[in-house]
Length: 398
Ligand SMILES: Nc1nc2c(ncn2[C@@H]2O[C@H](COP(=O)(O)OP(=O)(O)O)[C@@H](O)[C@H]2O)c(=O)[nH]1
Ligand SMILES: [Mg+2]
Image (cartoon, rainbow, N blue to C red; front, top):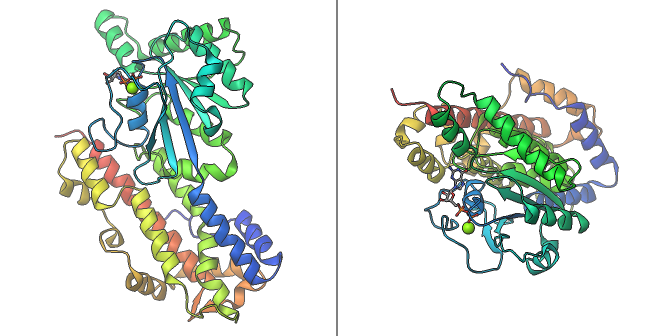
């Protein structure tokens, strides 16, 4: 069995210590709940720009896990006429907004006034798209973005078309790797010629978003985002590949100790006005959140089945955890907490016993360790089921 979830890392133990030793428990828990709230509600604004026809609106949809037809999707294949940035909220995380910016293709394009007109300061970063080589307007824009101390990334879209064309035209010598390298080198060269010193270009297809450079791009964006925005960025990614699912699991795992402390820890110490019972509500909310983020809610499963032309019951048939199918409510969580005594739990309790105060904390017989163990076990099951469902969806029909 993978043991990665049953042990609290040294880093976590240190974080818990620091949180608890700073002041009294009341302040510590207030800070923790604030930090959880901030992490979930961090605003993320992503600007998508480039010439008309490069795939901006298609990307706006794909990165939100949507197709081009569903309600709330950006219109694709049409020339944009508004001249204004259009905000598109993430369907599950409304604080994540992807902005479809006006095309930059006009001959008398002026990067500075364009940036002013789209209210540049609101975005966390810019993605500049091109479906061919990057041109003067793209480069001017990148430089202007940089001058405003904002980050930009170049994305070369539609590489699926290039590959297809090459395959048709060069039947004997076709080599995917070579075609991609050629595109990459061409892009980098045109950017260098435009005095962009260390150009970074991600090759993508919005029709198959999980392919090509998507994971490199995702890693880069994650690293370069400020700490407090990384969580929302990761959990709002579409569930398109196993690495994405693993990233989400890690992002959630990081906060399990906070939830465990908040739900039960404080209650052991008599603080006027605070309930003595374990606050199951926090846990219910977190667990529903996991399920939705991994796309295991009814609506997401149906969407996935639809996308791959499968029957939703076929996808559901690979779900192993009974917890995924059951409704998550206070009763279920209480049952889980009460049945949580196993060998693995001992390890958590042992790590927790290193932390002053934590050892003695128990609300209604439910300790920090029990909650930690239950949440990480649940998260692991959810993530594994999400993996199986995705594999099933991707399976080619027999
Ligand atoms: N083959 C392929 N076509 C794409 C891709 N991205 C967009 N398209 C198509 O290119 C056309 C223009 O896309 P759209 O998103 O409307 O571009 P916009 O004008 O920049 O918003 C549409 O017909 C899309 O379906 C891609 O990655 N691969
Ligand atoms: Mg458009």
